[in-house]
View 1 (cartoon, one colour):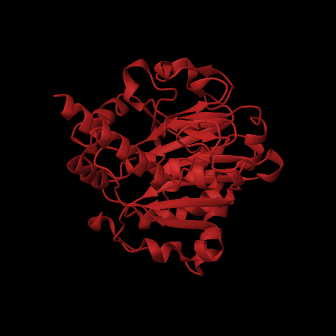
View 2: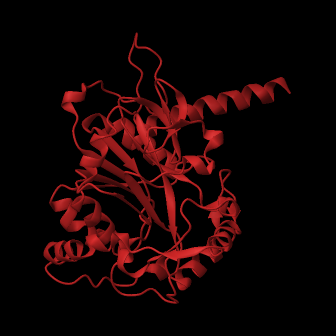
Length: 337
């Protein structure tokens, strides 16, 4: 029995070193102990500027151009995409953004049966690139973040510069009556959302994504909250109110005064059906078949129209046409997902 425990301990130590190597984390001789995702190089605030984003992708070619252009339009300086094995036309969509040095694409296969590739990707982005930016945003391709009143994300974040980070609650959008995927922009086609803040019987709609100052955090439980150097594990809403992780679903903290995060968690019914059949990986690597159906059931309890984002549509369409020299007509690649 003792030998078994010793072997298990050795395997865990080796796994830790493999993960550290994958994340590019190094320990300098004589240096203090670092958090698991802390920056490898120390920089002053004066050397860091702008906003970066990190996201993990797999066969999102049909949606990438809109998502990228939207956030570049709002002032994001650079976007790091971690490709978890795409087989669609994503490379063709990404070419103009890579050419203009707006996007870095990194192959990102599954390194572990138990550690989520998304968490590893976010840790790598923070440790490797965070030092160059004032803020890093961690969201998915079906999520759009934008300022409520300001013209850019940089303006909105300047009002929050005293904070180590901000947690943005989901504002969940559903199929909006679309049986099949419609042509055109997601933000134009999908305008039906659940209540916000969600009601008590819509607790499955309450999750947060993070924007962090890389110099003020030591890591995170990605992508839903972070560890600040001052407070440890913490969530902070866009009013600056701090609350512990076990209060993450407390409705009074779900605010969107300065920033909103739209989560298009179903898109069309056709795409939702594919999601339901595929299931969702849980923390232990198992497939949870009821996750999306449970969320949809609660979503449908209370819905309303929301067209706030229509103000961005004319400029976004103009920029996409200019970027590609034509109207975006991407090939349907979802069947390969």
